[in-house]
Amino acid sequence: MFVEIDFNSDEAIYIQLRNQIFLAIATSQIKEGDSLPSVRALADDIGVNMHTVNKAYTTLRQDGFLKVDRRRGAVVSVDVDKMQSMDKMRAYLKPLIARGICKGLSREEFKQLIDDLYDEMK
Amino acid sequence: MFVEIDFNSDEAIYIQLRNQIFLAIATSQIKEGDSLPSVRALADDIGVNMHTVNKAYTTLRQDGFLKVDRRRGAVVSVDVDKMQSMDKMRAYLKPLIARGICKGLSREEFKQLIDDLYDEMK
DNA sequence: CAATTGTTATATTATTCGTATAACAATTAG
DNA sequence: CTAATTGTTATACGAATAATATAACAATTG
Image 1: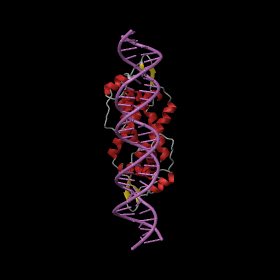
Image 2: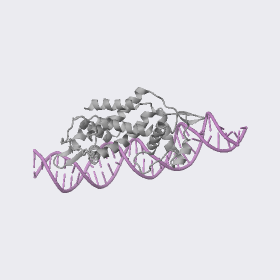
Image 3: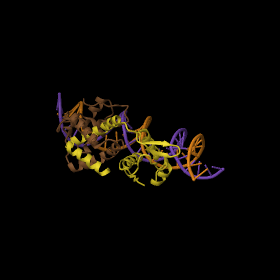
Image 4: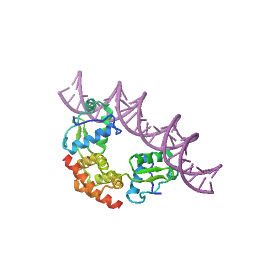
């Protein structure tokens, strides 16, 4: 499996799981239309409770990354709404940019990070 | 004051407060060497408990944004460690970029957001 | 000296996180 | 048709975090 949980992290397990699913989709390890493991199977795999996985899947569904089909399970299906995505991303980025500016990070350094991370994923 | 707390937000008050202090420093509303209000005064101002403000100040001190002087209170003093800042920022950005890629955001659109936010703050 | 500073300690309530069972209707495999 | 598995929901519990409420301390300030 593509999942690696750090149980000593201060980040919630379902958040770690969600982020790794983001990463797996972004890097095409998982593709549109692919089914994710059942909540029970994945929970068993990574050694956590079923509900913790279910929570990750539920938030992913609410945020438009998965659709759940009774017969195919949790299927990767990304709703694309560019405007909404940009707005959300702007809200996420705002405190990060502010933090970076305080620490003297230039906009070019930020863009370099973007490039690095994009290259790392694509 | 520059602080506006949303008590209905799912974001912790001390996090909102910390983010707004980031923003105030980034936009030069507060400058290096300026003193922040006392924990009691600010708590009274925004209508929260003293310890909530103290928690924000403490995390800001630990992250190298404030220094506390007995006679001057909480003074804005940003420790600049470019390498460490870049590493932290990369870790923060990684799941965001992944999320964005899933939603079809191009790297140019990301950079545009960076530019917009930089322009907004500077 | 009196007031204010950051800091620390203790306690309480509310919320969140993760776990543990259990059950349900729908679907799938044999 | 049966048995097993699916996502989902409900309830309950312990642990951790968030926010509040007092209270006290040493150091500094007016």
